[in-house]
Length: 154
Image 1 (cartoon, one colour):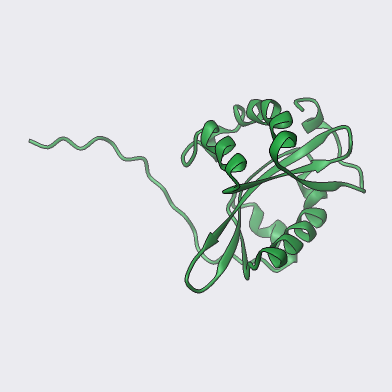
Image 2: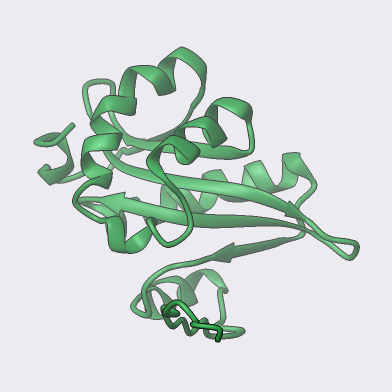
């Protein structure tokens, strides 16, 4: 996948949920790509927890590309709250994400409908606000973080 992620997406991209053996087939390449972007996932997960999350069905892994190559990978989960089921895109990487957005959004919308989700969320860099606004997404909040140092108690 390393080279595949650098290729340009054709206009007829396909989005597939990667499950079971298909996910395991691509996992070594996905894992390698995760090594290049730990700043986007390592605060919350380990690579093993991402893998196990997909294998257990807690996370969904989506591959975008054609029959030969996956160029974009996204991970999502469904959060269930008393008021709503929320589809959350928690990680996306690869080359050609902008070109893949129409296919991704259409796929996600169908998945949300089939899964009973009433809200969709995307967690990502600030630049996603402008890219997703054309699809009806609006920034609702900001997440600010700070790494804590060990407290010393006397």
